[in-house]
Amino acid sequence: MRLNENADLDTSQVEDLRGSGGGGGIGGLPIGGRGLTGVIVTVLLALVGGYFGIDTLNGGDPSGQPAAGPGLEQECGSANADRLKQLDCRNLLYINSIQAYWTDELPAAFGTTYEPATTRYFSNQVSTGCGAADSGTGPFYCPADDHVYIDLTFYRLLADQLGAPGEFAQPYVLAHEYGHHVQDLLGTEAEMRREQQRDPDEANHLSVKLELQADCYAGAWANGASDTEGSDGTKLFTSITDSDIQQGLDTASKIGDDTLQQRSGGSVNPAEFTHGTSAQRQQWFRTGYESGDPKSCDTFAAGAVK
Image 1 (tube, rainbow, N blue to C red):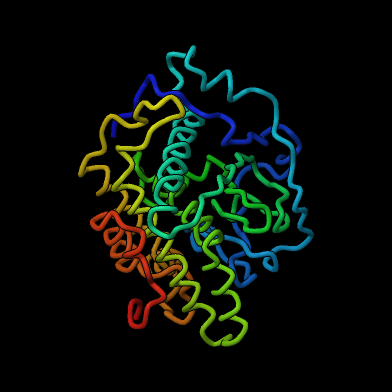
Image 2: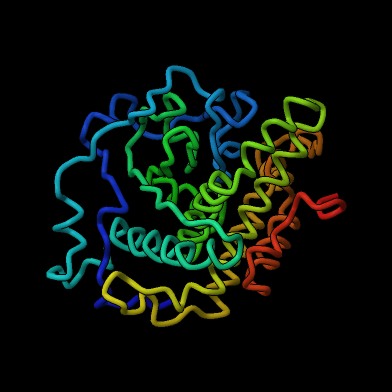
């Protein structure tokens, strides 16, 4: 994967809450986070990429928090020749690419206008429209305030503890979270939650379908990523290789429910799956990538997910 060193990056798509009062206080990564069902789980089970519904966390504040000062504008501006060596700025480029893709693709595929969502970088803990969260939660999308949240130290854990060190793991994670934003815009997430309320016994299986669809949307973005452009019309990537896509597939394999349950020392229990097995996550990322068509990502179709 090669990034365009001269790309014009839109820093307005990221708010940096680190040091603005949005984090701090707990020192390092906690070992637990609240998942979709509100159950406290180990960090290996929490850090798989997902979303939080309004009822999942307590004390939500839909107004969120103000962004910190102009740090990203200076750090990631074109005047900084080394900007893409910085994790902050590389992730900003990925976010710009993902949103550029959906700006074109959502109307083309679904006839719906794309509404941008800001990503918020935070440290340790953060207040969101879905309630308070911490680093142990992992990256997530909050439909109550339409923001993606990530503590960038997550990538170190993803590499060192979960065995997914490839650089393409980072845009895969972000593209998955923006897949949840797309589901929110299309009404998929709201309908899934209504189905969960109607049939609580199927709640986890419905969650799996939602997460696998987000994986598929990430794959569809990966197919079109090399054509995405910055605000000045220049390409954001100069190349994405087969090796990059394999890194995405490898990441998907490391964060399947079955793999994470085994890593945590427990037995594999399909009844507790919320994101899908490693094989399923690879399958649906590959489906999106090989088709390049978000309409191929209908995990809710009858028989699509066993």
